[in-house]
Image 1: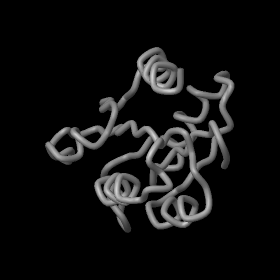
Image 2: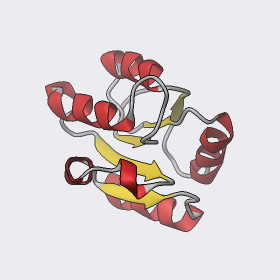
Image 3: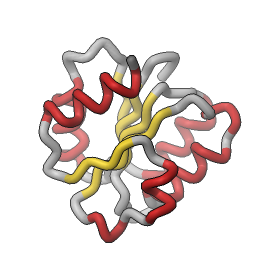
Image 4: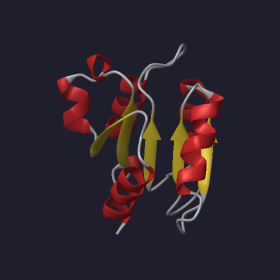
Length: 120
């Protein structure tokens, strides 16, 4: 990961692959994390331009990842997209701290549009 990269976080390998495929023709390096713990480890060493995170994961939730990013001064410029199948898992605070919320199944045009807008 590095300047201008996108970190995709989802505990479902199929979903992670779909997200990566949707963004593969954008000019940004993609990194993936199959769980919240791995994502937090990656964020300790790298500063992605954008994080796209699922909310419901077995180890560390998307909410915890979002709060960690917003509390870390190094990650001040990192943008966040929440991608979830159930809005009931997205709190008001999550919505306030994130830049976009997208419902699964995400449309490629919607996700690409959000990424382009945030990283323009």
